[in-house]
Image (cartoon, rainbow, N blue to C red; front, side):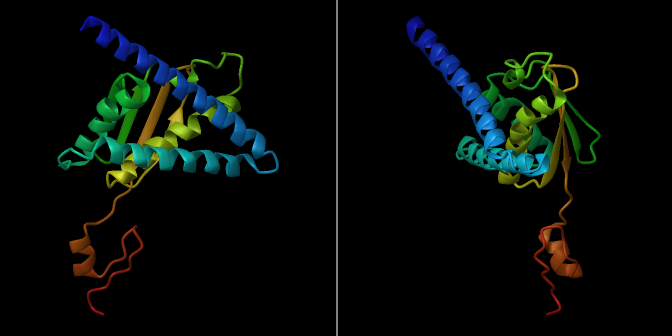
Length: 190
């Protein structure tokens, strides 16, 4: 029985290292294939790839889970379960202002471990855009529109800031005829 547990741990380690390598190679490929594009366009490509991966992973990890009751519960899911599945550890610290801003601290972000301290901030930026997209995609898949930024100025420590975009409940939009940030433009008077 102990050998099965050891084997499962070894498979996870192999999977984690494969995922890190895939991430490195994907970023390298996008950077090389985007040589004619601006840095901003390249970041958009990487972020969109991350968004799709995050959205699909969130769907996969929540198929047999009850609905979340609020935004904080969704963010806690990202910090504990989602992060553990993707990075093999939980977020080290979560802070919030209880007004839609959440700050996630990862003191040893695995996907930056292969970079040396001599590499510039642009290089680090290339590697952090994809995880920001993954977080945004996972949250979008769970019903939260948001903006995700990262600060990795202290090497290998990564601070992700999530700002939830307010979307009025559909009942409020229908009642007042306001157009929410979802752009549906539903008007009860028509």
